[in-house]
Amino acid sequence: MKNRPIHIPAAHTRRDFLFRAANGFGALALTDLLAREASGTEKSGNANPLAPKAPHFAPKAKAVIFLFMVGGPSHIETFDPKPELDRLHGQQLPPSFGEIKSQFLKAGTPLMRSAWKFGKYGQSGIEVSDLFPHIATCADDLTVIRSCYTDSFVHAPAMYQMTSGRLLAAHPSLGSWVTYGLGSESENLPAYCVMTQPEGLPEGGAPMWGAGYLPAVYQGTLLRSGSAPILHLKPPQEIGDRQQRNLLDHLRRMNEADLDARDAELAARISSYELAYRMQQHAPEAVDLSRETSETRNLYGLDDAQTVEFGTRCLLARRLVERGVRFVQLYSGGGPVSVQWDAHDDMVSNHEKMCRWTDKPIAALLKDLKRRGMLDSTLVVWGSEFGRTPVSENGKGRDHNPQGFTIWMAGGGVKGGCVVGETDEIGYRALGERYHPRDIHATMLHLLGLDQMRLTYLHNGRYERLTDFGGKVIKEVLA
Image 1 (cartoon, rainbow, N blue to C red):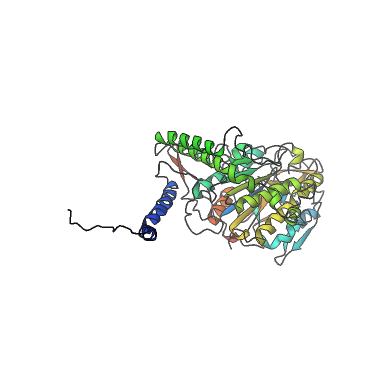
Image 2: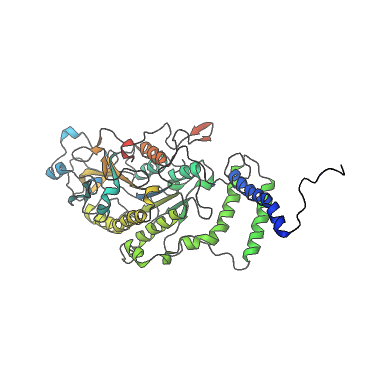
């Protein structure tokens, strides 16, 4: 043994030592990388549930911004012109269209034409109402889907269906499924952010961005309106950063001592503590709009009292996605009916106000994403829970219509400048290939590189899916 040659000869100089230890330093780096990779796997008891996960196939989009118009904007006033409805204005509904089933309509209510004109925009010639002069300039980036439908004419169930695929609450929301399937690209911000209107929440409330039976870490993080979107970002003044870090490390060690590989809730809690700590360091910069140029701020309408609130949220959405947030849900409308798209009493005053608040900021979001090279990898969706009836309600408004309505998509692998599907001549029913929320969700998942049938979660002995028994990918929208 004494004559055995030394396996690693001793280093004689510092330079020689560093040269001989190079493989050791590499091993340290490799150990850290492998630990990070392991933290994203479900087999690891110390899993980070929000670690980035590989999609099922090559994605077109990496993130989603879902612009949800609460209350049901009228498709026949915005993106689905109906010349025949204009001609039949004031007349009774022809028997050939059948009976209109809705919530508040009275028998014998006449048909009502749109109060606005439509024009053709862009090289594609997509027809857009005068209500949206700014969005109209982005026509060639839009894919307008005119043959959508839901299964309820009541707000909350239809909202749940559009945001979770089911009519009842307590199922995971779309954003929760996306973050469950893909994790987050940001280590310092929530994977799923929600921004509501300051006047109040949509009728569906928190279940619209809840995690349901998925682990709680996948629920949406609600950001506030105003100058402080995220509360408690400043560390406690009574303790320093080092002391706070030591406390979190001690708490983590205690939690991990009892952590079982199957204890997803405890793993999620550990992850949330760490995320909260990192957010104190990084989130203030993410929500600081003063870092934007005056040109960008004006583009979003932050210089106009009519657009500053919604424009601020649209600009925040871009900044969050830019920093790796996976899913942003942004609501227009909430609280009192007067500040929703729910135009029962007066279609003209309601839609003029809601469009004035949102048109310029939404167009700015699309243009800003595009000029930054982000639109190709960010899927933007504009939609609601249903549309409005072609017959009037009380002479000036319109009731709920789930039988046919419009959404549009842009960016993220979508074929811009095209129209998919149609409604009948008066805009009541979707015709031909009709698209249910399951189909819309299947298409969004597909663009994100997720196979709807493989994205499952075992709950009460049943493998649950966002699309339940499955939807059809709307191939016509794919670029």
